[in-house]
Image 1 (tube, rainbow, N blue to C red):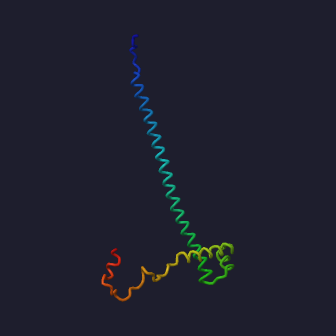
Image 2: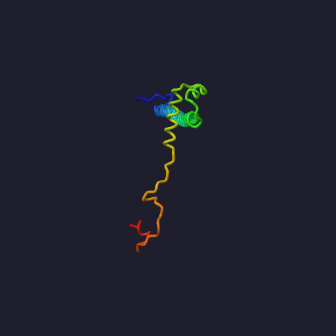
Length: 134
């Protein structure tokens, strides 16, 4: 068999060219994937920030209604008219406000064996320091 002397690319050159094209396509795919990944993560972070902000605003609304009804002794109907919400919403927010007060109230210090007020100095020969050394 005789080899044709052609001026076209050799098989090796064609293989290299195709491999380079494939690598470019893969690099472009990786770039697109990374771009979508970044967009997703940024959106997720923004959603978390917005949820936190919405939660804070909801607490502000709840507390305002609760204070109007409980601390300012305003009737539910009047608060509903003042704020442009239903009486049901006022009652719901007041209930949430009261529940939040119960859960956020700082527990009072109660004397327990671990927090009891120290009494007179111990008269035992071991002394107070050896009690916890065991």
